[in-house]
Length: 305
Image (tube, rainbow, N blue to C red):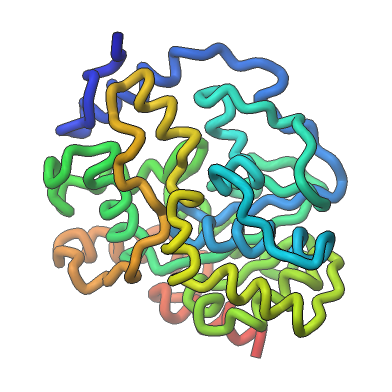
């Protein structure tokens, strides 16, 4: 018998009821938590900021280096670059061997809640774009299509996804580590526009000697059209199966994280854009000296010029 409201949520309250019901189904066990190792890598961008692209790039780099070929033999990218914050929900063994070294894990956390002494790959994205992208992702999967307007979605955006934090806490945490050798901090748009350079930067960060052939294999495997053709590998299939079984939300819902086209911040209502800008002015500008994301992006991107 389904728990929660037994279907997709039609309100913030129903979404909370569904997630609370899921959280109560399984008790945490030791195998649901990471036992850190020195070479671990965390793909830890904020929600809808390029995490899936970075997971794919990371996994294909290590597999192409190991085998000479890309690897699409997986059900869900978060099965090969696993996500600790959903491990209890889906009963995933975080201790299981991974396909290649180094070990990699997905996260949406800030630095202070990740194991120290690891390595971290972080892509930063304009907050307005993340808002639209997250809305598109939830609308028709966690939420009944059209049940919430863009104006009503703010509480879910602030949540930042399982195990995450709010956008601004995440950004400030990683901005503070921009000069640390254990952190590869880039912007999402720079990655998209400079794919080959990013692949080489990540390869160097991982200690992989990236030949031209290897780089081209990973370029092809991270192309939007390629990933969209294989979108069933990037649709949270492991989480979908649990939601189908326990919440009555069909596993064949359109939960893919790879859309045919990118999210356009221009559709954001003026009131929401202003609310985000006000939070930036209160929290980010005094710390970074950047009045908006475009200014911060210039600083981060210039490090790779």
